[in-house]
Length: 329
Image 1 (tube, one colour):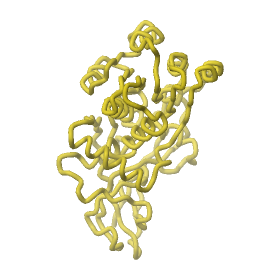
Image 2 (tube, one colour; image 1 turned 90 degrees about the vertical axis):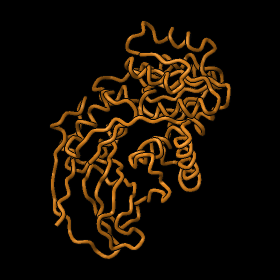
Image 3 (tube, one colour; image 1 turned 180 degrees about the vertical axis):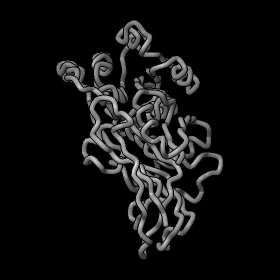
């Protein structure tokens, strides 16, 4: 008998999520059928997108999300016992799967890096940074890149890839410790947006000639300040808008259309799931190699215990984390 624990959405969020919005449920799983596997979660991820995506859930549904899991029982020859996979199984401790949506971690996964990195720098987080910067922004050496939430899971990888490609990188973060981390990663300019007197003047001082690429994780008033400082033909990758996710009031107006028109800017939103197949595998291989070569550093903000999923999620939305927020089951 296997008892599966799962965190469900008890009621839809209004403003900042609270512990009472979640409910932990336990259910006995049925015996495996032919072709099925039983999975046990090892590491789970919490990400900003869940705050918005949860609107599509019904109250009582399991919270969505990816995890790294181990096959603990198998009736599927493609996934023998002990196989490690990454899958969107949600906030659940144990799952039954027919194997169709499971992605095996590479057999050559190095012992020197944690399996949880398949949820971060060598997973969806890294993929988001990789394609957002290289495909949506199309950065080239010598250009200037602005990234906000730069010490977060995605932003920290964006900045490091931009440096690998020969760019000048300016990053904003929400604490002095995070700014110190960005400087350690090689950002050319890093600042604490909570303590500066003027974001407009800080951006202008960091790059008087403006910005070729803006990788936006924050949205809102921050973006309205950055966009007028874009160079002609600047590119803006809209990855997230975490500053607005918990807002219950009227959202701030967007950037003035005349700036977008006369500066001939390109703004594009994107999801990492757009890139599949060979291009995705190449990206994951590149990211893995950069990590192994020390060209990309990573930091995980690990919370112990499946029972602490909501706390990890709420803390991430408030910016408690440095790097990728992971829950160790």
